[in-house]
Amino acid sequence: MGDFKMDEELPVATKNPYLSGAIPRLYVKMATPIIVIMLVNGLFTVVDALFLGIFVGADALTAVTLMFPMFMLIIALSTLVGNGMASVIARQLGADDIDGANQTLMSAHVLSVVMSGLLIILFLLFGNALILSLANQDIVLAQMGHDYIALLIYFSPITFMLGLQSDSLRSEGKNQFLAGIAVGSTLLNVALNYLLIAVLEYGVFGSALGTILAQGISSVVVVWARLSGFTRLKLLAKLANITTSWREMIALGIPSSLNFIGVSVMSAVIISVLQIFAGDAYATTVAAYGIITRVFTFVYLPLLGFNLAAQSIVGNNMGAKMYGRSNSALKIALLAAFVYSAVMQLILFVAAEPIGALFTEDTMVIAEVGRILPIFTLMLVAFAQLLILAGYFQACGDAKRAAIFGLGKTYLFTIPLTLILPHFMAEPGIWYASPLSEVAMVCVAIFVLVVNARRTGAAYGLFIKP
Image (cartoon, rainbow, N blue to C red; front, side, top):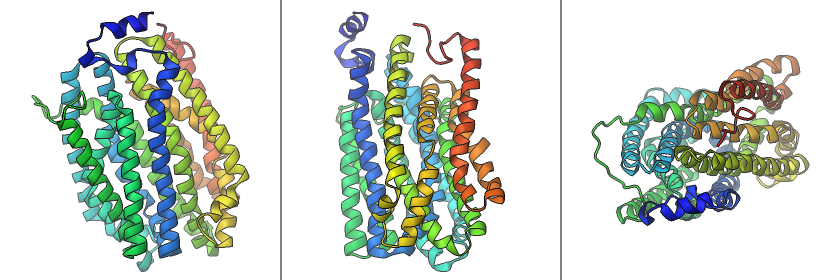
């Protein structure tokens, strides 16, 4: 009754879709478009790899895989601004502070320009040396890698801008529109990549160019929607202080950003350790690892969709002090993530080799995928629960616990274990580092939640008393 009464009292112009209606129905409504977006984006990573493998060759797939750490750095810096901004804006919209939300969005755009500019400068200073190192001094692979990653970095302001608009649209509840933009962008990307890779034979450069063109066109559509008044938030706002909310955005965005930086560092560490322990199988194992990263990305992105939907609902209801609704959103997200990850873990365990065969006809690479993928994803269910908890604490504005849940595994366990275990288990130790890290992180999570329950009185350290 209370929820529907609040809905009636809200003026039509400021009506917040997150603050009324049954939470299960709301979660499905908000999560479905985001998950569709993530599935389509994940499908693109697979299709792009197929195009490179089929129309360019195994070397192209290997070169792009070797650039994965640098690609993740782009995502990390974009996420630093976007996720932090989304947490701030969601709570401002929940409190009906439209002016504050507009200023936060504008300030985030300025910060993204600063971040992308920093990225370009770092690439100009250190990019060539890093590419050579990742390519193990192979000039051919290094040149292909440079052709791919340089374009993505030089045009990263477009990536940053589109990411900000996506995060703000999600916080506003414009998920259907956001889904349309994302699906259209991805399908356009696939079409452009086919044209540029298969028809015009631009190779890895064509893969990067297709991505930039698709993002640019999508950005124009979003700008049009903002200027036409379709959205509650505007494209431009007057700023008394250009750094408005920078500190809070960065503090809340750091956990997610450092998580992606951790993936970048982790990929670089795996490549480096493989150079030492893989021996003659190095090229084959790197190719298999490239396939595995694409498959894991495809599986991970819908989980991220579960997380982002919960964050938006939790953040808006936290801002409105409607804690019963935020509690319900967390419970539903944890359950959805558990069911999805359990099903996917079973599929990856049973069908690892057939999955590898989708990307290549090389029987040795297929066998490597069949050997590594089940180990690498052994604790996927635990990974999914920890991801949801990290997102929940970020939505609450609790940067400290968001950092523990989002970063603990990678920095405290996975990177050290990847460096240590091969000395005792040889090359297989590289892949066992991931599931062992999840086990360790579950123990840390239990400890943190027990302490938080005693500190705040929240049930299980999570659920705030309404």
